[in-house]
Image 1: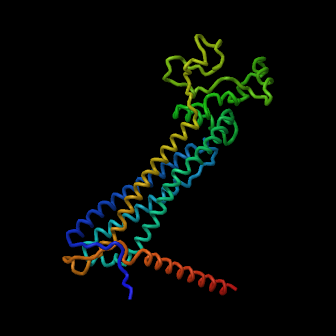
Image 2 (image 1 turned 135 degrees about the vertical axis):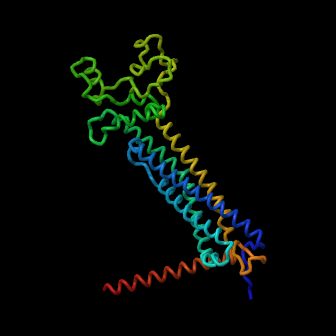
Length: 339
């Protein structure tokens, strides 16, 4: 007869059990606070994506913030439950009602750790998608900057101006992106003026292009009054050479600035989740060691798993197969009943 030994057995006396329960209770509630933090970061990330949605051409993915909100809520629920069990573990009568649930709770925690790992990986991998979305979205935002009378684009000018001011950036890649689009609406152009007419007619697409940038590109920290028009025309300004002059506009592109903002946020969240995984992995398995005997004064045997790893997961898969077959039978019976 083969005796199935528990996985990682340990010995506990009353004093060790008390210290373990108290220590785990504190760590569980620390994990609840971490869960609240992850949930809050998910809400904040989602709000930031919504706020910059126009800069991303409304193609931003909310998968990561939605997962953060989900795992934050799950972390709060699972760890609050674990804290309650730890609190009741020193009372044999109270702990008796929790004891049958411990194996299911451990397996649920393992699945939760897998979800945490998936969320952390996505926090790092989805940064490339954010970069591409920003590149295309900012390009279209600059193109539609002048369309203040077009439904759906009325606030594009204000949004882009506030973005350039807040993130101290100009254009998509750099300030020269503004040279390639007409960012002044035709309603503000005097078409009777020969200079304006010649500039429009000289362009193949009939656009009014100029080497100028919006006011929001100006750097208020520059000692010289902002030069936002005729940036490449040295004769238009006194003592000015755009090739060697330190321009008093922001030279950093908004794609780089926004991507740096979102990537630093996602990296920080990813590192927090990885730290949470380490905490959860060290925390949840210890829960199975708190199985108090009938006599709390004597020593008790504890283990990570009551059976070996292979036997435990084999039993789990068997139960899942039985449940799946039962559901198929139930669906077949319902189908026959309807016919």
